[in-house]
Length: 362
Image (tube, rainbow, N blue to C red; front, side, top):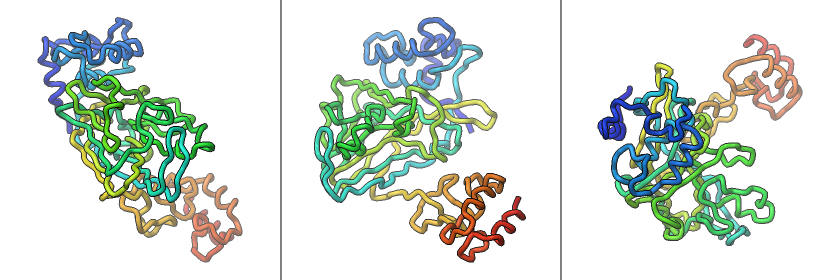
């Protein structure tokens, strides 16, 4: 199902925009690509009164202008038109308890106290080709995260992070708390080998300096956003990381966020989707895992099952099929008495009978 978003409706009727294409607005250097030069231009003039990239004609280059630009970044101007908007692709927010800290941990900037808890916040997307473009907020659509005491390691000071791109895993061995600083992912995994990065803008100078320890907010008139600098699909079986947040008092952690995603439409084209006012709380935790009692890794505590969460006897690579690759895995486990993946007949050992049963599945 598609519809034209309120944002795009406003754009289409502003300054005769219905006769213009995205490149008329966003190809700043005229090279036929909405690329890096335009991206730097959009960020460089963010918050500028009378800024030239102001599709909604508000008089200020603000969050709405940035959100209208991000879906088209990286596109060639050949036959590029405005995207339709979709609904129902952003289906769920999941708060997962990632780590409970039972002892103090040394950090680069400060000690992470015992009793703290690290949570991971995810958006669950409907299609594996959907991906997150931005997490955002302004005075009309505030982004608010709150906890009872403080968010550990969130900020611009040494030893702190705002986005995952600032995370330096090389420090983890000497300063183990470094792994648990709070940050926004905006769709990018915390992987030392990742080539993707997360950028951010805010409508207030030195934005993080004005935050209370127990609150992360974007609710000013200009607004701000966290966004993927390399907009590619980054879903992990449908779960897209929004952020990691370590709270020193886990008695309360909740919030309201807004998301912009690029979505895969049924006809093979791309669309965009806004999801605003999404709420979450650690009073309603999600446990990812296999919920199928027939699987070898059934988890009775699981509350949400992602694609690929379940493992079945004989399916060693988890692709849902029985192939030569799986047979090689079974042969490697031959004689094992604690390998349920290869113990197809359930007699407690991977033996000839299991291999014969497997061959009937090919």
